[in-house]
Image (cartoon, rainbow, N blue to C red; front, top):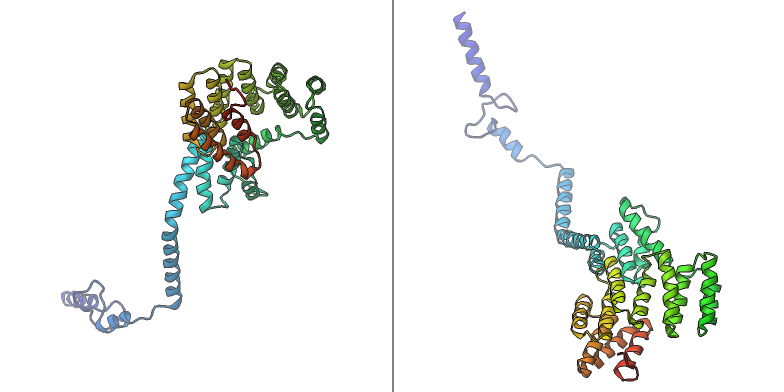
Length: 352
């Protein structure tokens, strides 16, 4: 029995030394894989299948492309994060700029195009809405909060447009007749006209041009009872209050606009005109600096700074800014700002 056991142990020990692959020759010592010399050479020269080579090449190509695109992804992600933070704090001009950078890299990114629509509406950059809007046509956004923001922004935008073309013609026909304008508004108000906000603001604006500031104020008061956050009426009302010498009320209305958009350059610039009107030049200069810091190419900011320069006896600087405003206006074809500023700088209109 002892001989049988010894023989079995010898057999087992011999088998343990055999090559794991062919199981006929002893494996070579000193290697992690227990293979004989012949099998080892066979595996060393074993041909790699073509599909494995192609697969590996594909993986390397994807990794290479990913490394190339990685800086773009990171750069876009940084600016998208900044845009989101800006929108959360109502800094819509910053948001629009940051989103513009994101869309340079990824023009079809739905969320960025959606946010761009909201930012452009709050900034009054209506001519910039077409491109992001086209990107969202027949597309599904999975962000319900963003969908609500877009719908709310576009819905408010519609309130600024008179839908009834005949009503536009009526207002234009009597634009030099204040009593008829006020009677037209009274009729529209009595029948609860769907265009009452847009038409009422237009009528109030015509009365403002005719220096009927009390009549304009009366209409705007009624509009703001209907919709207290209607920006068109708030903006015009701040100008009316300035004309009536109600400077604190005018400033409060500008601040109300700035609560909606902290970077509303037009509102900040109007605060400059209000403070200049009551000869508080030091505060007016602070507001002008703030407006120019936010957007030095904005015609309202340039107008405000030009008036600061004019009353500080820096006539050359104010004239240079007037030229810059005309250059910017040439793009849009609207010369309202340069015309009214030119009257002040030439001394034809006494602003204060």
